[in-house]
Image (cartoon, rainbow, N blue to C red; front, side, top):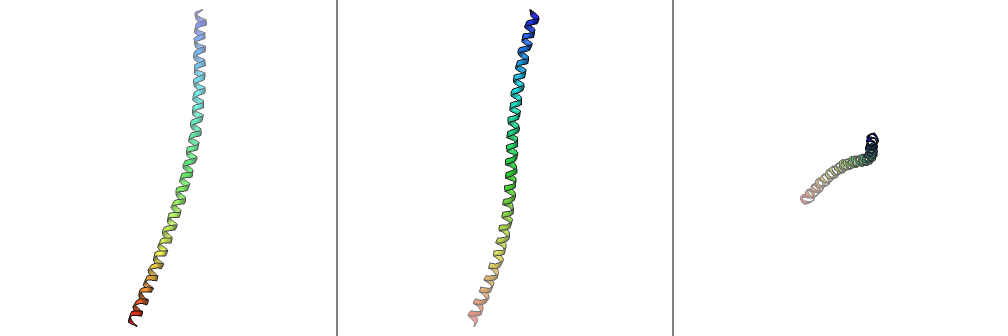
Length: 87
């Protein structure tokens, strides 16, 4: 009788272990999917950062070009106003 009880206890413990194992496997699968989504999101974020950095560089170059052109125009205006006031 004691042997049957021991086997029943062992069977119960084994069933619980199988259930815990299945639960852990499901949790692992969920975590792996969440990690994959996070990595994909991170990759998208990095690509967006790189795009924005390139845009900033282009805008800085454009701003510098505009500054130089404005300085040249102002210099020409100054030259013309000096010539006009002396002539």
